[in-house]
Length: 297
Image (cartoon, rainbow, N blue to C red; front, side, top):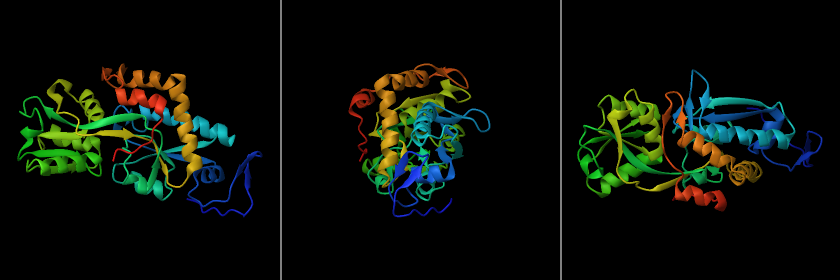
């Protein structure tokens, strides 16, 4: 990443766009100076962001990202702004954003107060709750059936903290095993290394829909908590956060957001044409007008 220094006076970019003096963390300065924005994406977060082919990421969050990028190009007056994509995981997504490796992530990241100490979050575009995915013949119908059993989850996820806390408070003596990402965590369930997989409910529906045998699995248990997803941007960069928020609000007001939601959650999606059949939640419907970016906890 380049180091950029700015004079005390305003920097004029594209002839008409003036920026105040700022540090390198200010995203629009960095993007304009490099004529490139770098986007982080998740490789197996169906239907938000996942690979369709070796390098092609698709999904609901990917399309939201593309709309945001359109607004970045318009704001900077750079119609041919270069876009680079890099995969991120639950463990490295925050450090790589903070250190400037990439500039924007819209995936399946929960907005929490703890994360808010390091990064900033956009208006929430989804609300999820931690539930369980298990095999139909496992005997697991609810959390109480997990006593002395192994539960898989994704390393660095809020779900890991939630399921550990629930197990401890209910004396379940859970054994927690983690995968580096959602796909690896699912493999732990699929190969019998775990009796259940604890993740956000929508991720579980997505993993089941794209399994070799979807009918082998069931999503069980009530949601342990409601978690808002938001796009991540660097902290203390209100200018870029406002641009991202405004792009999402534009989609929500115009009805385009609802159309994209229907496309990815209530229609057949690639690669297998499975319909998740997941209507928009009341919390998300309310946020199409409230535009909240409030953290989960």
